[in-house]
Image (tube, rainbow, N blue to C red; front, side):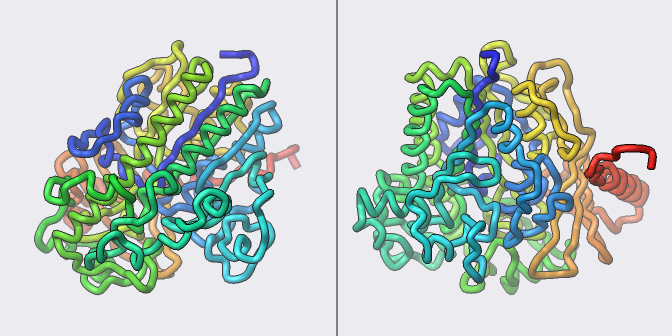
Length: 498
């Protein structure tokens, strides 16, 4: 590594479950390029989000802090510009920082234009931001796409310049064949060469070419917007997978009856959560429609993977690979039909909260290693600073994973905390604690959930109210309380005795 520190290439997908990748055991999906990162790196098998929603999770990635501390407690809440971000620290220490794709640090659907909310649809509608490229939360260079399956942000300007006719091809009304009744699922008429995943790949490649001529090391977040719903891949990815051959969701008869009431209410009535729009709240989705949704999701993932391959090839062509740390992750998963549920919300099943987390290093680090160590996306920022040789500020609550990555330790966390506070059901304020064997979710003022993940990995049997598990439940509640106290914010820093 150079004296100025290694380059950092952070690649993320949006709403990607860990088990939707071949390197995580899915034998149907084709993800050769993500698999290659895993083959040449450290693959965490037990990586978890701090919160299963886009904005809170992304804010935790950027700050190394839990949502209850950075206060982005739900989607629609802006990250304070007073927060100390990883990118602001790296910029002050000689790094060129860039982000390409989705950010979601401010509300996308803010009701009124707010000049500092560059994630806001309204801002881009009323302003000409063609020449705006930052700064933004410590990112010096910004190339932005907004929303999902929509021509917004810098992506729209690129379409206007290169394929203006494509702008009219978005949405189910332009599907290549009449869409089925499967929720938010259709075969997109947007050509793959002009799809947002391809634009993100193109823009990342252009950035790397410029970065190769820069004397500064870089930190670049390449943030793909897929496989987030709507499930609308382009040709040929929209028929790449046979719906009858996909991995089917976890489901058992009457399995939701021992869960808190909002589980069955959402399944049977389609109540709104943070993962849905009022016009398409899922309820009792039929099996064939579920299969179509999963097949389309796989197609979207394979398009992302193809573009990751192009980015990795460019790293090699520019001779950057030997001094670049490559990380692949996702901001959260997707219920994707498990237990009859979709998208995200107050259902902290493994499919929603467990994510891919893969680190590939220059030669002096371990390669081809998989680890079951419990880690959190909150650990990302302090780990990056540790790798770059920069002091970790006391505001960061995550832990550096360097001792795991270089093989000196097998764990840094005994348990993982996940937070959730619902914006649609004010009574649903919950916290989850995950240990190697158990997962407990505690609801403020209500009953909770307890699962033995060794014997019930599908989380079908809720043990929370069973007398035989009283002692285990109480022990985990104490552990959860301890964890919540441990992350109490100790900033501002104490200056003296009094």
